[in-house]
Length: 284
Ligand SMILES: Cc1cc2nc3c(=O)[nH]c(=O)nc-3n(C[C@H](O)[C@H](O)[C@H](O)COP(=O)(O)OP(=O)(O)OC[C@H]3O[C@@H](n4cnc5c(N)ncnc54)[C@H](O)[C@@H]3O)c2cc1C
Image (spheres, rainbow, N blue to C red):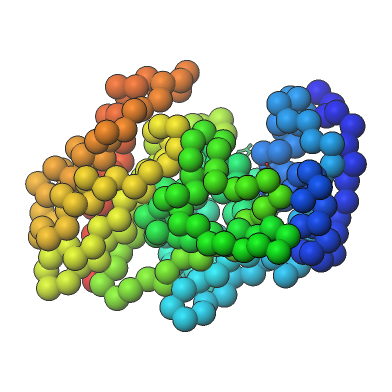
């Protein structure tokens, strides 16, 4: 189907873009989610502001023990970034799981996060990494934690006129290991269940566990009961098994044509176990 008629502007500066967004225009990044929605007439923006020409929004750099990622960095940029592979491998690994080559070449981290598809991959990793998002509007800037940003299906805490300007994730600590494990829907690549685990070991014990989950319910979440169950243990097979069974604690699973509630719950437990075991294997 052909989208409804719209105006299109490709500003060269962030100030110009923000000015147009404040007047009600909608940001366009890779177009991988927005354009299909416009073609299906699920979205009908009157004015698109293309963020793609804002070159100072596409970067990946380390500063003071954190990695800063500009919103228009593509999935391919993240997947192939030497800085991420060395200092935050979980995010590079997660980016490599997204869709296909074409989607990874065009799609951006900012677009994926703003779209907040409940089956998107990044949110699991960003929850486990306790990422922060820098949101900018005309004359305003605020930083929001991933746990507070994802509100519901396709719903975030972005205010009208605001964009995601930057994503900030911590550089990996010594003794830390991470892993993203995903059951994907074969036609699209989206997660039926995706679990990101981040484990730090100290003196033979698990000192820190962070587990992010996507695909299971209306929005991504931290599996805090499972994290708690792991921390302080030696990480034996029984410890991992017990923690994995808690990954769905107080979470309502979704049902769709790809997976029933019971199946999703079961798969979440299996993939949590795999993600935790794999992260532990990668921790020193
Ligand atoms: C065939 C196919 C397979 C896919 N498979 C997967 C998959 O396996 N896993 C996965 O996670 N995703 C998958 N996707 C989605 C893909 O990752 C998209 O790239 C992503 O959802 C949207 O990013 P985008 O840059 O294309 O954003 P766009 O489509 O341009 O925009 C999406 C939304 O975000 C808003 N927006 C964009 N940038 C910003 C910003 N900086 N600040 C605020 N709002 C902004 C737009 O206004 C729009 O509402 C797939 C998509 C396709 C078409």
